[in-house]
Each structure stands twice: as structure tokens, then as C-alpha cells.
Image (cartoon, rainbow, N blue to C red; front, side, top):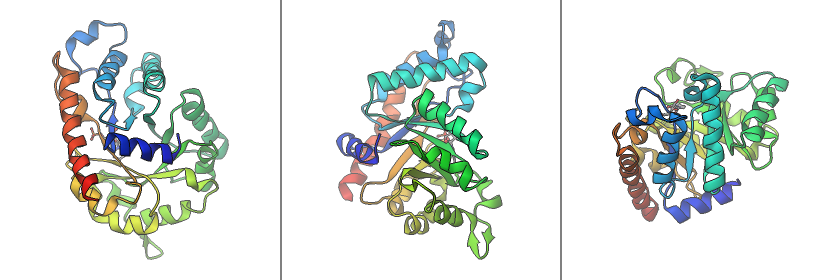
Length: 272
Ligand SMILES: O=c1ccn([C@@H]2O[C@H](COP(=O)(O)O)[C@@H](O)[C@H]2O)c(=O)[nH]1
């Protein structure tokens, strides 16, 4: 999917919501545990109940890898279900990969070719030759960790090297990578104070913003300086939406939470 198509979806749905599919078998309704593939059945119900309110789904691969081969099969069924039934949805494999070049190529093939996600999250720590193999895929996107939502982000990412915070160096340096038009960045909603500086460095890039909902980030604060002419934001909420209820009504409850965020986004879009 191109960023133009993503923007068209945002305009049509009046939403820039990304729903995180982080399925934990200890948190899903008990009746689903009796099915052949509880993870997939849970995702399918959530997706069917929310697809008109969001523009993106983001399974975090950890929640699938933790269940071994069966978990990986559930991930594959989930991405195939989205691609077959809701092809306009932008899909993100939140896998946080990145390695020496030939290994990164294999990671990229796994997520962007075999599983056919639109994008994958990548850690920038190993530098250019670890990121560029992901960028080589046409109309696919590499979402580089820039300033993450967790407390540990202050351990390295905000530390100055040559009088510049590391996250700024990541943004500036990666802009010169080959096929950098395929780059997006992760910036946590809990770091709203940093969005003005970040937008000055990457005015046109899409930012994937996790951290609203369960982590306490504010949608309004992020949008204040985070939006650009093409909106340029994908706001992620996972637990705050998918675990709104652990009863039979879980999909409806997820829809109610997603609708609250979509309505707030609609108001913000009208004001901008
Ligand atoms: O900086 C980051 C990068 C990734 N994440 C991931 O996003 C979701 C957030 O889940 P919530 O339940 O809405 O808190 C999860 O998959 C994280 O691993 C992040 O939170 N921060």
C-alpha cells in the first residue's frame, strides 16, 4: 500500500486509528479457548467489529511467537484474513527486527513477502546495512524505532552524542538511506513534548504512535505538534481496545472503545 492510499483511507474513515492485536490467551473470553484456534477466532471477531473505525491493525509478533508453531499459524491466518476481507487496511508486523544485511533481507522477506504485511517495525541500532534491506521492497514500509514510549527510552534514545540526542541522529541519518521514502518512525504517545522537534526533522513521514490507552499517552497532546498535511499519524491502542471486556460481548466492547477514539480523531481532523 502506498502512503497516498493510506491517506485516502484516513480521509474516508475520518480515523487514523491503529488497533493492536496483542493476543494473550489468559485475557481472552473463556468460551474461545474451546475452539481450534482461539487467537485467530479472537482476532477475527475484533477485526469484523472494528474494521470501519480504524485504518490499520498491528499484531505484535511476540504474542504469536510465544505460542510456537500454532501461534505463528494464527498470525498467518490473521494477516490473510485482513488482506482477503479488508484489503484497504494498512498492516503492521510489530516485530522490531534488524540484523546484518543478509539476515535483515530474510526478515524482510518473512514479513513483507511471505506474510505480506504492508510494513514491519525495525530497530535502528545496527545501522544502515541492517535497515536498507527492508527499504528495498516497493510499496512496503519500514517503521524505524525513533523515540519509544517506554521509560527505558531515556537510557539511550534521549542521550546526547556529539551534542545531539540519539533519536534525532536516528531521524536525520536514516533520511539519507536508500529508498528512505519507504520509512516511517515509531514515536511514543508518552513523549508528546518531543513531537515539535521530531516534525521539524521529518515533516512528511508517517509516525506510528503507540502509548495511548493503557500507557496513558494523550491523543490530543500528540496531535498538537505531531500532525502534518497528510495527517501523518497512526495512533495505536492495543489493550485499551481489545480487552475492554473478557465476556461474550468482547467484540462489541472493543468496538465501543475504538469508536471513542475514532470520534475524538474525527473532531481533531475537522479542526485541522
Ligand atoms: O515504543 C513502543 C513501541 C512499540 N510498542 C508496542 O505497541 C503496543 C502498545 O500496546 P498497548 O496495550 O496499547 O500499551 C505493544 O504491542 C507494544 O509492544 C510500544 O508500546 N511502544
